[in-house]
Each structure stands twice: as C-alpha cells, then as structure tokens.
Length: 627
Image (cartoon, rainbow, N blue to C red; front, top):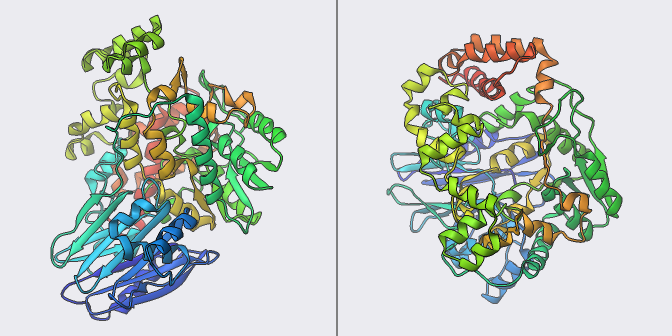
C-alpha cells in the first residue's frame, strides 16, 4: 500500500465519501491504485496501494466491536507473529500484512507494536468509544501527517491529502523554514506547513471524543539495564545470525533481489548476507564522474574496485556499475520536491539513487536493500572508550584502553565548552572559527534570520553539529534513531520509481540488540566499528572488512555544477524573481559563491547547494500559490 487517509469530526461531515475521494485522488501515484473507502456520520478513512503488492486495499472492520482499521504495512516477522496470534486464540481473517497488523491490534492494542518487526503506519477508529489511534513503526516507517482543528482531526500519508479538505489551509511555516535553512529540523512533529504535523516514528497519536490529541512514544530502549558480559566474538556471531534473518525477511521471495552497493562496510555486509540467502542478487554501484578532484584524506570517492573485490569473491552477486552522472545535479530535484512536499537536501546523490532504482525496476526487482543507518546500529563507532572507562571509574578498562594519545584526547574533550570550541578552532574545525556558524555556513538571509530569531537556536545547532563528548555513545545513538526519519524519502522514491527501499540495519531488533551491548565491543583496542568488522569476518574480502577509509558518494557534485554554468546561473536568476526566495535566502552571497566556484576559487559549497535545493522548494510553493 502507498497511502492511507481519513478524518474524525465529532459534529459530523456531510458527503464524507466525497471528501475521502478527493483525498484519494490527491495522493495518487503512477505505480499505485485506488482502494476502498469507509465512512459514517462522524469518521471516514481510505487507502491506496502499490499495484504490484498483494495487500488488502480497503479499510477493515471488526464485526463484533465495529473497530475500523487501515494500514500501510510490511510485516517482516510474519511467522513469529502468526504463531503468537494463534496461540492467543485469534482467528486470522485477513492474512496479508495489513490483516496481521489488524489482528494484533485487536488482541493487544498499543502493546502489539512491540511484537511486530517491519515498517508500518496505521489508523484505528473505535466508534463505540470515539477513540482514534494513529501509529508508526520504530526508526523507519511510511510517513503520516495530521491536522487538528477544533474537535476534529484529519490524517494522510502526505500533506497534499490533507489539503484536499476544505477546512485545511496551505500556509508556509516561516520559522520552520528558517530552521531548515540552518539544517535543523525543529521539534519532532513540525513540518514546513503551518498547522500540519508529522507523527514521529515509534509513536502513537490518541484522540478520544472531543479531547485534544495526545502523542506518546511507544518505542523506548532502557539503557539503564546492566550490560551483558561475553566476548566480542560471541556477540558478533549472535548479531550475524540476527542480521542474516532480517536480510532474508526483507528480501522478496518471488522476484529478483536487489541492493544499493558501495564498497563500504555496511552495504557490503548486507550484500554478503544477501548472497547467502538468495542464489542471485543484483547490486548497483555508483561511479564518480571524471574531474571530481582528489577527496580529503581518509575518504574515497570511487569504491568500484572494492565492489569488484566483493563480486569476485561472492558467488551469486550480479554487480552492475552504473554509468557516472554528467548532468546538472538539480535536474531531478523538482520531482522530489513535488512528491516530498519539501526540499531534498542530499542533492549530490539524487541522480544515481534514482538511476539505481529505475535500473532495478527494469530488471524486475520491486525491492532494493541498502546499508543505511548502520552507523547508528551495527557499525557504530563505539564512542570514546577511554573517556567512558574514566567516567565509570572502570580502572581495568582504563588500563586496557590507555594510550598517551587517548589520554590527551580525553583531556581536551573534558574542557569547558568555550575552551573546547577554541581548541577546535585551533585544530581547523570550520564551525569553530566564527561566533555564529549557523548563519555563516548556511544560505539564510540575515534579515530573515533576525525576524525568525534564529540565534536562539544556537545552542541546539552547536549540540547537533559540534556535540559535547558523551561517555556512553548509546544515548546519542538512541536519540538519533528516534528522531531521524527516512520514511519520507523512502515514500518519495517508491512513488517515483515503483521500487521500495528497505534498510536491514535500521530494523528495530538490530537496533535494540546493538544498543544493549557495551561500547567497548564497538571500539575495541583502538579500532572503531569492531562489532561489524568481527561479524563480517570470513564473509567480506579483507580489503573491505579492515578498511578505515570512508566512501564519499556524490563527490562529483561540484564538478557537475561547474560543467553546467548556464543552468546554475539560470537557477539563481529564477530565485531573483521569487518573492519567498528573496525573503529567506541570501541570494547575493549565493551568487558570489557560484562565481567563485566557476572561477576555480575557494567557495563555501554548503551555502550555494543549500540555497539552490531550498530554492527549488520555494519556487514550487509559489507555483502552488502558497505564501
């Protein structure tokens, strides 16, 4: 399924099915089909689904209680969940994924969600108690937005479904726009539209009768529990078994399996496990365009040689190197803006991601696995073990992790924040060189920043991009897993290409397993990411498993901008004619950056690219009549 939508209005809605039909049309995509509608005097809901996915494409009802339920669901642990439901005496009326989720909800209500692995969003309406519940899976899940006005609430996968309703206005939230311009998202629920909220992953929204809606988090990980003992090798074997099961569950059974493959540890690890589960796996790899320049020390722009090492050692891995992209980097940005209804910041990788997904579809694949979010779960770096041992007064651990370099590093990490920033400045950190880096490194117009009081967000900006040291890395990893939301990008790519992105390393079970292990297993004897490296021992070539050089996808973006000076300057001229862009963006500074780039002078690329990508969104807003 690709969309769900509906509303609850205690005072009733005339012609409810007509309004639902408008929402259904607004959410239509080229690879989905319209589903059923359900409505009574007070509430209504409907669905759409991907045409290729066999799934219940209508709201479901419980005859006994009158409960109405609609879901966009992928259940990965189907066998386990079916066994639990049958053991609980539940008769499965619908055995597709949405039906399983409905059955689990009828039996266990919100507590059912902790029993389910996968990606889902759902709406449940109980007419007898006038209780509406919206929910999303943890870490990764289909997007779900809502609008609350008076006693009523409307919901839809994307904001355009809500704007189909006559009582929902489409207005820009300027403060959120300003926050996004300095790469801060604001509070978890905010969007770029005033009055439109996003339900965060791992949360449920509950609304009873005329009471205001309440959002609460159902997915939590208790990090205060005692950490397990055991060796790195033992835990790595357990993680390998778990991740192999997740990879197998997420790959389709009846169509070709595909994955997005770099030469890095995370995606290569998924590839190594995938070929153990399927006899033939398609792998798509991006190659950097010529002329991109030499990447910074410790980084690699072209990982195709590592991919070839993996393909030569992995029977069944069908490696396909994509031709490098030579077009203007923002050529596909308008489609992403239209579907996401917001800007797409990762513009350097957009073309090759779309190319890989389309190539997968042309090869018959409807699902593509990635290695995304691995840096927050299985391949997290482990933090600073010396600092952790010092904070915990773990004297054996302190001795084990001691070195002069680590002791000196821990010493400056423990400095007061102003002194630490000064040290960062002396070490050449670009963000530490100015008093207000959120203004100096981003394209926000000074007057717009003043009007939206952006300087008040300075402490949040520092904690995000220059985070203070933490003895226990797990708390920051959990915070990021609960806040980062890639479901919107997943939904957009599926809408544009018909292929679903899936992320085994973002599976809730994998995240919980890794968060409940001590940091020393992830940073062992001075080596970061040791859990992932140990888990993949014997599965990956040593050239990949032991490499500490990181991949830089999209490193050719600057070269591609320079190769298309006419389109670059046309973009800036277009923004000069846009009232919103003139208000929010520092167009003069962006133009100077473009001129420096084209003249081969040093240019702060983040200002230019950040302004261009946001500018595409602002131009789309103007075309849509939004002010």
